[in-house]
Amino acid sequence: MWLSVESRQKGVAVFSNIVVGTDGSETAGLAVSLAADLAKHHNGMLHIVNAYNVPTRGVAVVQAGAMAADSGVSAEVLKAVSKQLLAEAAQSTDGAKVETHAVVGAAADVVISVAEQVGADLIVVGSKGMRGARRVIGSIPNTIAHRGPCHVLIAKTA
Image 1: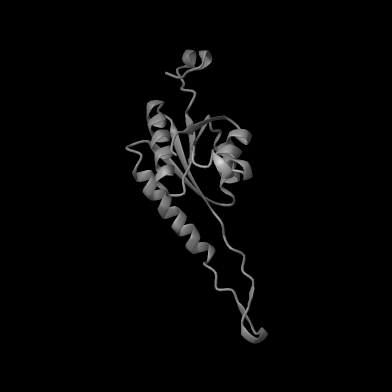
Image 2: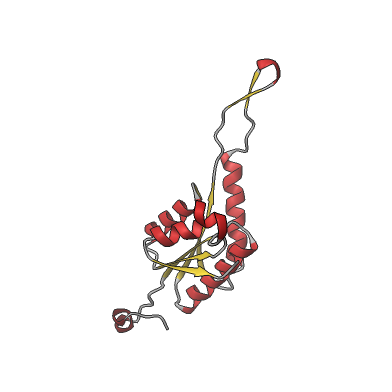
């Protein structure tokens, strides 16, 4: 069992607050599954996070210079989609205690922010994006591994 000396004396697991991000993909599902197993093993709380971006509304130029308002998807619709994705992820956790977080922003920033807010002991991320060009130009797992406020476990998902 992963317990520090102090935690063993108190009977408290080190990983009592675990944060995992998901975009609904199969590889993210593998990270959620691993995080759920850890949360159950440590009787901890699993925080599943989905970051979404609201497109800016602007003015679109149409034929002959006429202008029309951009008909982008509303923030309410995007939040509802995010919450539905999180509900599906939460159902796959096989009995872990779960809280979900649908938050506007860049994925790495949102996961780190939620980890700070909930006092996370561990962030679980998938390995997708850790190799090749995405690693060079910046990947979510790489950013979280370097900027995370706690332990970061990179699950072998890709």
